[in-house]
Length: 497
Image 1: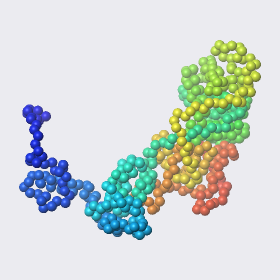
Image 2 (image 1 turned 135 degrees about the vertical axis):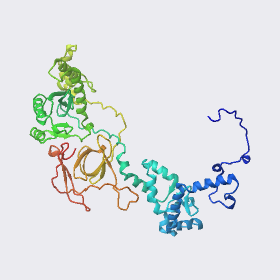
Image 3 (image 1 turned 180 degrees about the vertical axis):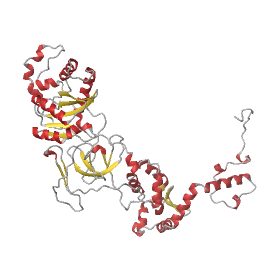
């Protein structure tokens, strides 16, 4: 802007004719001689000023510490001597601390008392801990931290120490991404209608609803529970449905308070029902009920104004839902009754004749087509008793807690003991194993205390004796199995949540 009032004419001139040369482009020497001293020449003056600025910067302080640490390290000085005078003909002839440099000996050089591997500085032992912390200052993860280290510094075992540092960093572990979904576990296919059922609750228009769906036919039953749902309400409707559809052998729920109570456990025991609860905060394991809940909730919202199920609109909608074919090509009504139900949709009467009774035996051979997963799945490694794990918070998705595995369930569910003594039940996807730091570890951030993982025995009891897990005591020697009762009550917000 200042030059706009002028008519500038540019011309070329040799660099030797310039009055003030660019000192930074002339590569000033690091050790000035008498010819480089400050004199009358303005170019020498500029160059000397730049050298002083470079020597007084933060790098000069770091190199001063580096040279002091190198001079006081006897192993480092021995390495300097071997580089300058030559290595022996065999690795065994080297002192024990220097044998790790044998494979890289051809890449080592010296520069003013500092050992270099290529262009990387070989750091003395006393500065390695602080160098690790400086490399990890950005908390970029293991790969990027190693990439940065390989650009500037080197010492034997550096990658292993970086791995230990990054994996033991509390901040990095807390903000790790969620683990990938595992391949779904296919339960045993029921052979009879309402042999295995799923149940769940949902809230719509200020009221609670109970959904009861068969795992073979997909036929749903729904009931309105009111503004609050209790175990007594769920039990009352189950008793009302059992005479119509039969007593199931297995009921799968999400383990909510209504299904995890002692009263519901007694109800299942009286009727001879096995109750299976999904892992807390992992609704995918009860996906069959979740899908039915979604469908019934849409039906309630679209056919009612106040949530009342005793209306023609809702009952007609439920009737058509039961008549709609699924992925097997048959509707829930056909799979259960052997024929479609008569509704207001026009249909030929031949669909309701005895032909459907003759094909009822085909219901046992119905194969449901599983949809391919929308994202790749990867099987996570199995965790053993005593494994230290980080626990992911189900809402914030941060790995903010840690504990020790004390018991293992049937379907990828684990029970983890926290430092406070509480026991959490979690799906494998929410657990990430880690190796706790040892006293010999160097340059590791201080970590929180590790919980005690030495229970004498653990029994994980759900609602029937068939789902009990026994865990041997964790001692230094191989223990014998003991039967010390330790019940984990599966109620949210109490013994685990």
